[in-house]
Amino acid sequence: MNSATAASALDQPPMSEQQGGYNFGFLDEQTKRHIRRALLKAVAIPGYQVPFGSREMPLPYGWGTGGIQVTASIIGRDDVLKVIDQGSDGTVNAVNIRRFFARTTGVRTTTLTAQASIIQTRHRIPEKPLRDGQILVFQVPMPEPLFRLEPRRAQTIKLHALAEYGLMSVRLYEDIAQLGAIARTYDYPVQVNGRYLMSPSPIPKFDNPKLNMSPALQLFGAGREKRLYAVPPYTPVHSLAFEDHPFEVQRWEQACGLCGSADSFLDEVIVDDAGKRLFVCSDSDHCRERSLAGHQPAAGVQPDDAVTPPVEASA
Amino acid sequence: MNDDTLLSVRGVGKRFGARWACRDVSFDLHPGEVLAVVGESGSGKTTLLNLLALRLALDEGSVHYSPRPDGSSPGGLRDLASLSEARQRLLSRTEWGFVDQHPRDGLRMAVSAGANVAERLMLLGGEHYGRLRATARDWMSRVELAEDRIDDLPSRFSGGMQQRLQIARNLVTGPRLVFMDEPTSGLDVSVQARLLDLLRSLVDDLGLACIVVTHDLAVARLLAHRMLVMKDGAVVEAGLTDRVLDDPHHPYTQLLVSSVLMP
Figure 1 (tube, one colour):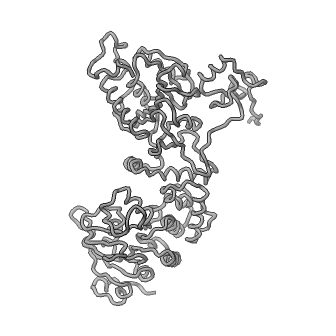
Figure 2 (cartoon, helix red, strand yellow):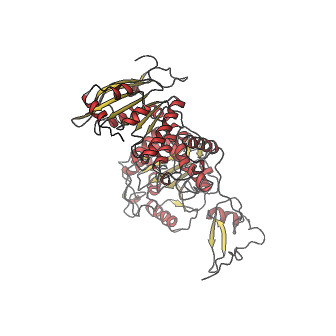
C-alpha cells in the first residue's frame, strides 16, 4: 500500500498509466476504496467476518475471486507479488493470477517468499517464516466455520455475536467418538484473539501454528460469500481441541525426495506408470531454495528410485 | 409473589394477527413445584409454554424469574424482558430445560447420543473429552439408557428412548425449571407409564420445578401438584390437581374430566 493507492479515489490515474485499458489493479478506485475500508474493519476486529460488495471478476468463483479483489485493493506500485496455489508457484491458478496482476498493474512479481511484499495464497502458508511488513492474502471458499453445523445464516451471526461456539466442540467430540481422533486435516477451526471462531481457509492443519503470532498481516477474502476477515500481526490464534485430545499437526515418516527437508509439508507424487511414489515439499520455493543451498535428500533416496508401492494383484 | 417464588407470571398474552392465542395468564411457581397446563388442542397451552421459555416474544404482561444467586448478581425475581439476550440464552441453557413434544425437534439427530447429552456442557466451555464422556454415560444410565449405546445416533433409538435421551440432555446442567410440551404424547401406553415413573422420580430427586403441558389428564394427575385448565387462550380454572380433577367447578373442566375414557 503506497501513496499511489492511498490517493483520493476520485482521482483517476492518467490514461498513460492505465494498463491495457484497465485501471491499475483491474478494479475501479471506488471499489478498491470500499474493500480497503472493509479491510480496516476486519483488522480492527480480528476474525470477524466483514460483509463487502464482491465484484464480478474475469474468472469464476472458486478460482480466487476473493483473494484477487483483496490483492487488487491493497497492491501498490512498489509492491512485489508472489502467488502460490497448494504451495507451488507453478500451478495454473498461481501462474494465471500472477500474470493477471503483472498485466493490470505492472508490479514486479517473484517466486521468492523473502522478496515478496504481498503473497496471495490458496491452500498453504509458505514454509519460510514471514516477517514484519509482509501481507498474506488467502483465497477463501467458505468463510463461515459453523457452515454445515448451523444452516441458518442469521443464526450463525448470532452465535458469533454471543461467542457461542459449543457447536464446533460437538463436531470435534463426535469425530473423536466415532473415529478416535479429530478428523479435520484442513480448514481446521481456530479461535482468534480469544474471541471469534474463524475458518483459516482450506490450509492444512500443518499450517495452523504459523497463523499464531505471525509477524505478517493476514487477510482473507471470500468472493462468492462476500466476506472479508483478517488476522493482524502478532495476534494469538488458537486451534480448537480438547484438553485430553490436544491439537497435533501432520507428520511424515519420509523426508522430501528433492531437498531432504524433514520438517515441511510433503505432497505425495506419482512419478511413473508403475506407480512409483515420491514425497516432495509442497512449497516449491522452499524446496528450490534448499536445493540451491546444497541440501540433498538423505543418502540412498533419489528421485529416480522413489518408493515403490506394494505390488497389488491386477485384475 | 413472595421471596421463594421461582417464576412469577402476570397477565401474559400473545397475539397472532388479530387473534389472541393466549391472554391474561397469571400464576406463581415455587421451587420443586410441578404445574400441569391442560386443555384441548388449540387452547393456547403450547403458546404459553413457548412464551415462558422465551421462545416467543410477549405481546403483553410480564414474566419474572429468580435466577440462582451467584457472586455477581443477588437473588430475587428479575424481569426476563430486562435481561440481555446473552443472559437469557445462558439461563435457558443452565437453569432451564425444554423437553419438546417430538424428540426430533429437541435432539440433534446427526450426532451421537453422547454428544447430545454433552452439548450443553460444551456450550458452557467443557473442554475435557474424557470428563464430558463420563458425564454423558452417567446421565444415560440415570434415564435408563444402556451406556454402551453412547456412540449410537438418536435415529437408531426407539421413540421412548429418544424422549429419555432428550430429558438427559436437558438435565445435564442441573436445571431448576423444566418446561415439557406433551412429553408422553407420542409414546405407546406402557412406554408412557415408564417415562412418567422416571419423570416423577427425577423431579423428586432433583427438586425440579416443572411446567408440563398435556392434554392427558392422567399425566397431570400423576405428576402435577397444581394445574391450570385453558380454553380458547384463557385460563378457566386453576387449583390443586386433586381438587380440580375431583371437584371441577368450571363447565369446561367438568366436560374435560367426564370425557376421559375409563377402561
